Image (cartoon, rainbow over all chains, first blue to last red):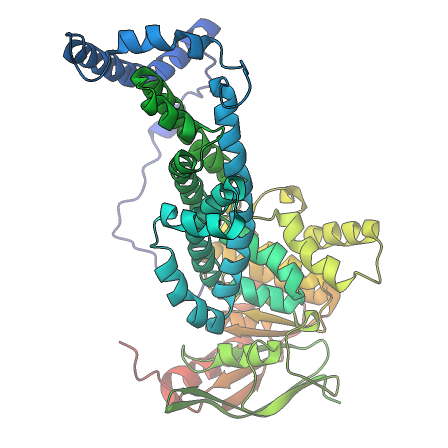
Length: 300
Length: 263
């Protein structure tokens, strides 16, 4: 409105000739028949599922061909299946001690990860917020964290065994110390990146620090926090297998180690398969939770 | 008696050893119910001035008095409508307004009253229909309406508008200006608005404060816009007072205080 519209007389005028006789087309929303929709859905699923299945089949075929001859070091897939049949179809048996079905081993591992990871999430978000919010906390803590986070998870195990004198808390500590760093660092970045606008809004509304934390900081930093949480869950699943190999007892890590000691190579392969699937599911789970929690935030 | 008073406000920014004097000796009094615009070229410290009133920045010397009391921290009595709306994207339109309402009326209103008050304010800006939408689901003009509702809902003593229509297209802007005029007429708020649009300033304001260029920007001239309210955009285009006021502001901005750095 600051400038009067210039009328350009030389511009070709729109000629209203055909428009008067234009027929009105009624737009009925297209509703494809049910069968057609199902076909479409099946096609969409097939596009995603078929290619990996083909690759998997090819992979199994090559593996079978390579390992079927006598004297090969690793069993072919067919033998893996026949040898681990019992374990696959009876995951819930419990003969006492560490002679349990795979379900119980995985459950024990997941339990450790759940505890260690939960502590890491709480501590990580808390410390990350502190570092993101306070310049002095960042200056003091950040260099130390940058060094600590490069220490391989297993290097912590002997120290934690010495401190806790027990396998269970040591394994949980290793999970914690492995997954806490990415959560801290990502949270801190997220907090530091909260737009000044949101801080201004909070200032005008006069939110107190606690309300500011819950209503502004956490939602605003949520996309970053969930990036950290997702990296963290992956790392903790990586670390648990190695830690359990060393601490023994029930757990998928020790199951693998035990299978190696008893030369049950097929069992190792089956366990690896499960470890991979569960790692994948954990990753997707956190991603899914993150997607729900940060809906709205991420798009801004 | 002055309602809002800026008393000898100076603002000096210090970065390391370098100091920049942004505002120098700003004196301004605003009466209750007045609509005052601050206009000036970009970089003249308009926003800094508004932030000082809002309490988001503190004046280096001098101070701001609201109803004879000094204010130097942000608060809902000086609610701000930000240029880029600043709605929280994870909250719905309703929740964005309710956030302020819950804080300001925590003790004086019941839950049901706060709900009604939130809806009332959304109704004032004609946004009640979108109350459950999130900011990224509504248009820029609508976001700004919600921003205005959020500020109004805090029942501020002074409503601060920081280039509220700057990011909008011309048609939406005109529409929103009319809305703000109607709200001002209806509620009688005291409004301090920053703008760099001459027509906007003349159309909406009772007084226009013209700022000289920075550094050390100060108030160059204050123009009374003696146009009766309610004002009609279309009728004003040919109104002699309107044209004269517009001329005065243009002269100030483009002749006497031309923006030298402008490309």
